[in-house]
Length: 379
Ligand SMILES: *Cc1c(COP(=O)(O)O)cnc(C)c1O
Image 1: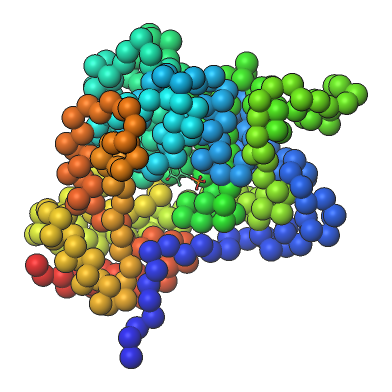
Image 2 (image 1 turned 120 degrees about the vertical axis):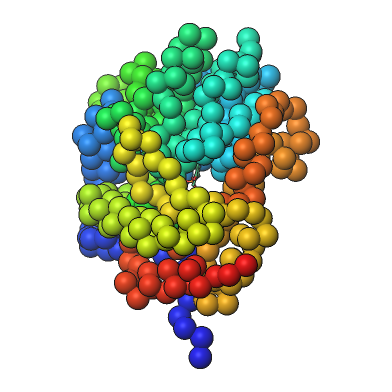
C-alpha cells in the first residue's frame, strides 16, 4: 500500500475561525465592512503601524486598486521582476500599462535594484517589487531611485506579511502594499487580500474605488447624508464571512509564524549536508532581513536534476513543486508591447528552483518522510 500523500500545501485551522464564521452568519450581516472586516483591518493597522488597511477580495484586486489609484494610463511603463506571479503586472496591464521586466538577484531572487537605472524611462510610473519567499527586496535603494524619478513603489507583499527589512515591516515602505490571503499563503481565508495604504492622500479615493466608485464609506461614517457615484471603481470588498475566518487566523499570526519558522529551520538544518554533497543551494537570507517564513526552496544544479527529484518524490507520495515561469517569455507578454532587460538569472532559477511541502500542520512523521525522500535521491 502506498503511504498517505504529503501535499505541497495544506491549509490549517489556527484558532477560532469556525466560531467567528458562525458568529458572522448569525449576526445577519455578512456583506463587507462589518465587524470582522473592521477587526482584521484594525489588527493589520495596529501591528504594522500602517495608516490604512483595507481587506479586499484578493491580492490581485489590491494590485488592480493600486493601478487605479496611481491613475495608470495606456502606454505608462511599470517595472516588475520577470520572476513573479502574473498578477504583479497583469493588474497594471489591465489599465493599458506596458510591462518592463527586470531580472532578479542571484542571492535573494528579488528584483535586481542595480538594473533599475537602465530600465527607467520618462514613461515609467511604477515599480512593483515582490518580496520573494517573504525576504525583503533592497527597499532603501529601490525607494531612493523611485523617489528621484517621481515613480510610485507598490510592494507586492503576497509572500511577506509580518516579515521585515531593516526593522521595517514589509508592505509598509512603498506608497502601497498588497497582501494575499489565498489558500497557499501563510495567513488565509481561502481567497482574499488587503491593500496597505502608506500615503495618506490615497486613503479616501481607495475607499471609493473599492466601493464601486461610490462614497459609501463616507456615508457610513455619517459624513454625507446619501452616497453616490463619485469616481471609477469596482467591487473589491471582502465578505464578512471570509473576514471572520481571516480574523481567526490573523489573531494567531505569531503562533502561525513561529510554527513556520521552526519548520523552515528544521528543513535548513536537516538538508545541509546533502545540499553540500549534491551542490544544491539553500535559501540565502541577508542579515538585515527578517523573513516571513513563506516557503522552503532548494536550487538544484540543473533542470534534469530537478525533474528527476520531483519524480522521485512523487513516487514516494511527496508533492514538491517548481515555481514561476519567466513572465517575459510567457505567451501573453510576447504578444504585447513589453521591454525586458536581459533576464538570464530569472530563466536559470526558474529551471532549477524546487519548493518542498510547507504547511503548519505538517507532522514530524511527514517531515521525516520528506527529508528521507530528498536525501535518498541519487541522480
Ligand atoms: C499569490 C500571489 C498573488 C495573488 O494573490 P491572490 O490573492 O490570489 O490574488 C500575487 N502576487 C504574488 C507574488 C503571489 O504570490
